[in-house]
Length: 311
Image (cartoon, rainbow, N blue to C red; front, side, top):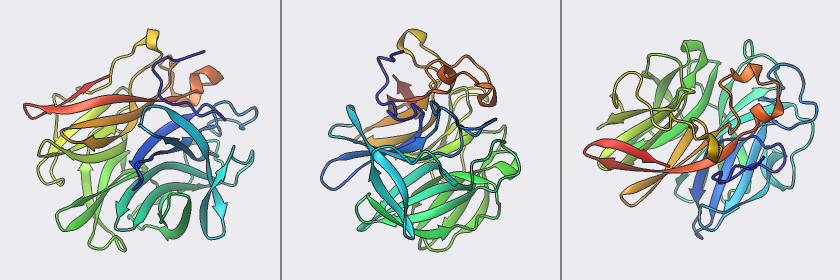
């Protein structure tokens, strides 16, 4: 099955999700993503195929044509880019890398889970900081205490003279909570940023004079606007989302877990979707075709104080 509008599909397990895209000092585009095991021949029972993932790495000259490079594999006290496919058996799950550039370093905030769980419940999830000078070797700095043992999907941005982190807290009904830091060394929990119904994958960026947050509601992405990145107002009504429509002919369904690269007065929204999704819950996706995922790109811009998205 081909999906003509997909920018990128993982050549190993065909399960590229949760993309984060950065551009290095030499102008090379890098995509780090959750390498779900959609096509693994024997991933295990239940939702084991969603676990046991590593961070896949792809590279591009223009942000459009992508080539698989390899996987971030354990090496000493950290992770190192290993060319080729990941090992067939792993003892830890890695999800949803977030990358920011600070001075001469890249900081990666990675969701880590021990083992390869086959159920959603009963497994600690933590956000761990790594640092790198070259996007190839990452030293592990350790887990971040965010007041919960069920945290995933970190997003980090500079706001004024402080840093702020947003993350999904599964122990708090899967809403977005936040923490603040003066130095990126210690973090202080700072309450709920986005409440309401469950969601995941927050990402925050600045465009058109506003801070924007997008979150994945599994039916498209909700959009929130703020002038201080602390108080947020939802765009549209309670049911309003972007990328909430499917295009079966192009093999693209509702947009899930994305991030934005700002380029001048517009942004590039990288997100993933399940091209053959039928609406079933992920735990019920027993057919490999339903499990497969791909990375797509859309354009965003601010018009009259609203974030407008077009595929």
